[in-house]
Length: 197
Ligand SMILES: [Zn+2]
Image 1 (tube, protein in one colour):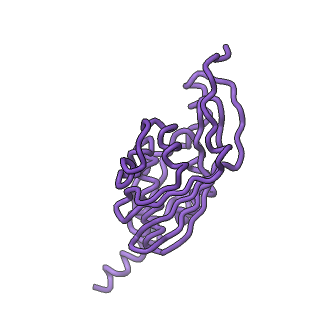
Image 2 (tube, helix red, strand yellow):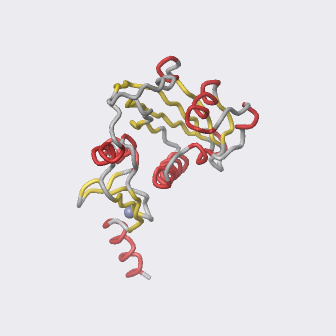
């Protein structure tokens, strides 16, 4: 059955880049005009730009796992002063939107964030459970609580930006559960340090 409801506004296709910035507390400290439209389209309601400033970014991110995953990524950008790019999805009921996010470290632990649409596909509206079965990230993602790397294969631990790219973690409708644990090389290092005490 086709849904006769009007299609949601495809704001990103018309204005390809959304730019914003977060401060050391992950609160919005600056944003382009498109951000308020983005926030509104994602359910934040119509807000004046000054009402958006200093709001925690997590208020605009759906899902505990996705929020945790972003915290790991932000920590990595700040600790290493790294620029990171990775694919993610920002779907509407009628479209799959394949997007890309670029994070740039700034002064005082700020992070500049830029998102753009790479491609989109129309999709038939499907019952939620069918879509979920096919579009949910696999199970659990192990994150080493010492070095913050993620396990991408049984014997392979990678930096979070590699895991995001290889496993395409943020391209699914649901993010994996994060499970903190200690990776093998950190375990070895810890044992060696303990032995030397
Ligand atoms: Zn580790």
